[in-house]
Image 1 (cartoon, rainbow, N blue to C red):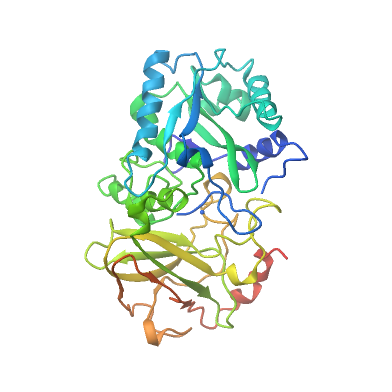
Image 2 (cartoon, rainbow, N blue to C red):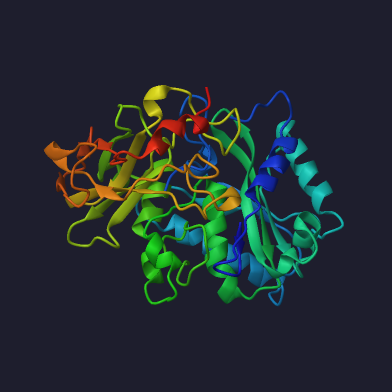
Length: 402
């Protein structure tokens, strides 16, 4: 979910997760840059339909603010096309009819409940795209006045195993298309199963828009130019729905470790091309496949070997450095990045992978260069955090679920 103000962004994904759990019956158990949800077996959730006939989406019959229904449907189709046109993915999207009613604040919950029940009862899984003409639906769901801040929200709503069967999206017609476009593309990323990304966070949080093109569309806060995907976004969608080109791209993987050898969950790891470090860059969160504190007991693996594991994918040929940084403390609740909410409070300085010199006391600015060519999978790039004599790392167990 996204809001208008850049520095006053507050997401309500936690509330949405509560609604999501209510939507799923007892017999259909719900099971990160990266996947939004991960199963108990450590497998990211994805839409099988997206790599088959196409992820079906069904718009309602109302207006979207000043846009007519027909114009609103074209607007949605154009936003899905941004993801479909990524060369690294074979995900496809197709309009599947139209809802029989105009969804409003008075019938919103009954319509969505009915669609979820139909999906659970195998009567057909419809993913509604709701046009909240004047913001009243958002006010009804999130409280009076919320529609002045929330531009829209979206995400999966029914799962089976690690497959997404149904989702939903709500778009706020109180905002114009210039405001909504980047938000819609961001929310459709969530709908497809993508998590937030912290890549190039300094460019996303500074007081200027001149470098916002360095920030991924899946960055938690609104920035300018978010309708244009970054390589980090493209790699993430390719990871879930890989094309042949994605399979020919390189990968770097390894573990983020504490000085005692334990894996550390919740660090942001970035591979940057030496020649183009801001744009040819892809991120991963350590422990993204492991159970955390954000999703609930049915999400993520409990395999201890995955606690510090990271996997950076979709890398073009070239030389890369790998760096690690904390997740910013402002990224909480619906703005969270990775499996932890709130982020781990371990205080460690940003540092680079140092190659043979890697240790808990190496020079944090010592940068080993890693060659990625021919779709190579470079493994065991392990980073030992330079926590020094800080006592905080011993308390990290409070973020681990058994």
